[in-house]
Image (cartoon, rainbow, N blue to C red; front, side, top):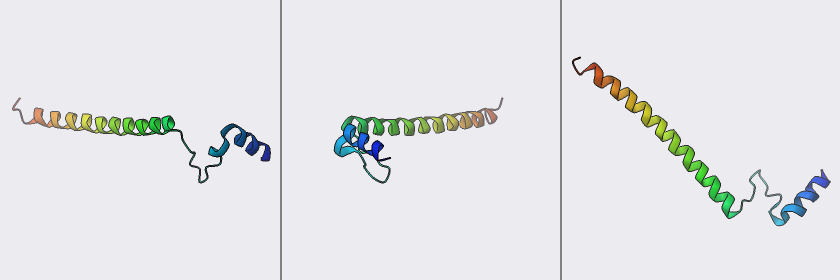
Length: 66
């Protein structure tokens, strides 16, 4: 375990051992994480809207008199 810690400190320096399971991210890594989160939220919103459109389009056909 000590060897692993030593290798991690040698490779990452002060950024190793961030604590609480939250790694210290570089600016690029932080931006990528934020963009991935925004993409996931947009995909969820898109899926909800698709479901809503399908529900409303079905109800429109019921009352169209056909």
